[in-house]
Length: 167
View 1 (cartoon, rainbow, N blue to C red):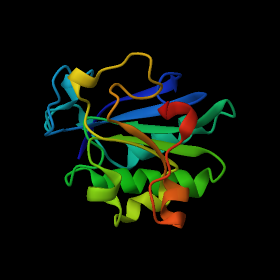
View 2 (view 1 turned 45 degrees about the vertical axis):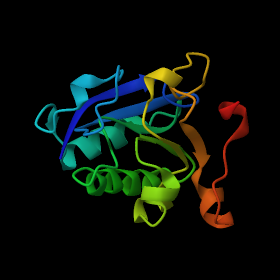
View 3 (view 1 turned 60 degrees about the horizontal axis):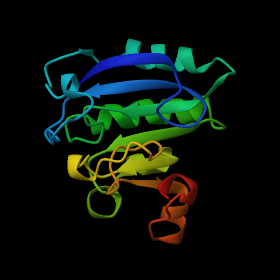
View 4 (view 1 turned 135 degrees about the vertical axis):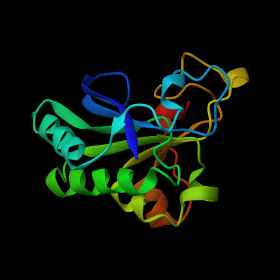
């Protein structure tokens, strides 16, 4: 598994100041994707113990509200184990900070039974659809994408949308 880049202070991918990691590799190839350089599974850098440690070290800053994991596609079968390793390590070290993950896969169709969900607080799901692009939306690019409260969705056994970001 590989990653494309780490942003140590990101204010556009989730609420507050965050650390963001962009995983490398995606097969969706959405039209006008904002991150096409992350599509090649052979690009970027090796995702290893040092990368996990680097992310965790950056998250120690009290100003950091959470971790954002994007892509590429962090939930692709080639990437999901590494994504889970990072999410688990983050939650163990920072139980009061949150994790947001962006994926083209759907919560209810593709991910509901995946172990990684127990470490994720918010999931932005659905592929970017250029014809449904809306620059006024918070934390997503197209109106088909959903901002999901993962903890409540698992507890209530139904998708719980976070209303103030999905309007």
